[in-house]
Image (cartoon, rainbow, N blue to C red):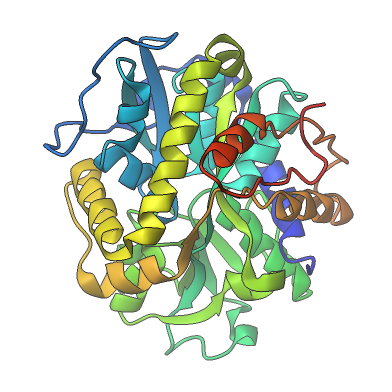
Length: 370
């Protein structure tokens, strides 16, 4: 693919690198909000516990994390975990989730590729493993059509991304570089003003005119469209076959070593969730929306939910080659020293599950544990 996703990685890596690893000692509430597990549809922890009494799972309040939303809401994870209790924390973007994983505040997380790369490289390969895929697509550049009528009009405008160094931030910085424009990755200042803004705030900022657009995941992108925005670019169009990893599953290496049975149970729940999502798209969309309402107190309206859900593909494949491309582009752009990503994937547990389900094994692009 184009250097598009590459610069992604570099900027991501640089950006996240700016986040001090000192934060690792913070408490769980410093990183994400606790999810409400009171839904009547939830499956209670039942039966004999596995090797851990509890597994702490992190995800974002984004539809691109639909596997986690639906798996939580419908109880797919808890059913596989039996007597081991699943607890959940919600995050806005990847860097803070990586900090939580490193601090032991979560054990397993749904997260984007750029923070995964950065977390792995900053720890010199000791912090995490990517153990599965979750989603592709669902990221768009949405703009105010009165101010921006073409891609070239983005120059000189204020465009939001969720957080310094998160996957969308890196993707946008990469796209800017591909256009030949200059922006300082850390400050966001340059030919385009990159404004790091919490996804919860972005729609109001767009409505007020304080930003001219945003490079964001769903459902934020569709919220902006509902406010009068126009989709100027779908990131899928920048990738071969229109596929790229937007969400994968990571686990703490320490937790994986100590509790492989728990990790396998969560993965099994993920595979069964994705299978159910793809077989029951309307019910799955409703379940994801219900979990968003549980987590945030507000469900998405149909004019946001429907187009957002349609743009995301749920898959067990981590699309490892796209992660590798991202890292290679990061190096080429000079935003990252050449990383050693060997061992970032451990797909053996996932492939064992896929084989049992009669599904095709997935590939780690040569970046698996030896």
